[in-house]
Length: 113
Image (cartoon, rainbow, N blue to C red; front, top):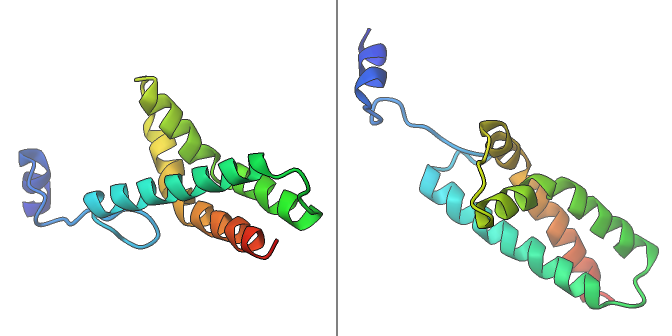
């Protein structure tokens, strides 16, 4: 009963909501997602400047674009001031770590180019 009363009254201390694979607070997760977006965006920009990417780099970039799609869709909708569905927020939450890892792989391949 206490949990239900707490939920109805807006109390959040009793139930600590965590986000993403790392169980972050909302503020921590927001900062993390912004960091991941910036990294992925930087890797995309660097890829656009390359004229002689090898197959491994091309595949890593394609994978990054695929797994980071929810984050990019979220960013686009936010910039355009469009509604953001809860289902999209959940996809961002579930894909943020995979997006970061994919961007790190592209970054590593670019560094060894």
